[in-house]
Image (cartoon, rainbow, N blue to C red; front, top):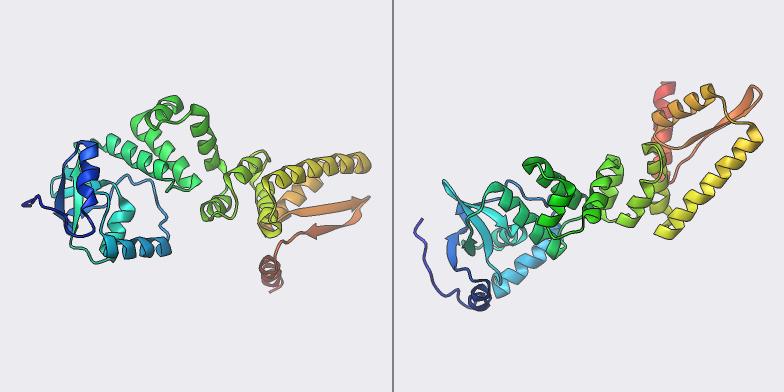
Length: 284
């Protein structure tokens, strides 16, 4: 590729000053010679935000160069995934880049740091990025934390989120529950209990404090039930768990010396329809 140094034209003049502050030199590169990062920690990109960034680029240009490293056939992106995608969306043929000599490990570190500093990662993406950094390069939590400028406890708290069920992770990614909610859910034993409470959080719009109170109230209620019913037998508990796993929601069995009832909870009409459809299939 024949690189060429030149002024960036209307809307990109600020780049010259900004680049000088970093001590790096930028060049103009055909956009087709830049491949996406193989270690990009960010997975989800909001289409509306990308379109807004693309519109801004059309009007004002790219205010900050992309950070890349050389490969055998061009360049691999280190930082600036959103800017690259938005530039393609805007129809740009060329973009400003800063070339950095970096290993794969350094590229991952830089990508994580850039996304964290920009607050571009959701909590699960950030957790997976820390895990990836540790596994790829054999780092401890403390070593990984130092590399990205975080406290070890912060990294540990993010890594705990990976223990959540896929359904709860999805809600965290979408922002329907917060990291505070997720921490409270992790205090519950069993994915079914966590999933049930997560549904209540979303349906009732519970705050983190209200979620904590719900757990405390539930614990008190369970202790009361144990005192009045002299505990459920292990066989009934096993049946209760089996039915809960079948329907994917909380199930309670009320036993009175061989007679009783069981209750199936639902938290939306959509969930009720799903349970009803399962029953229809059993009947059929």
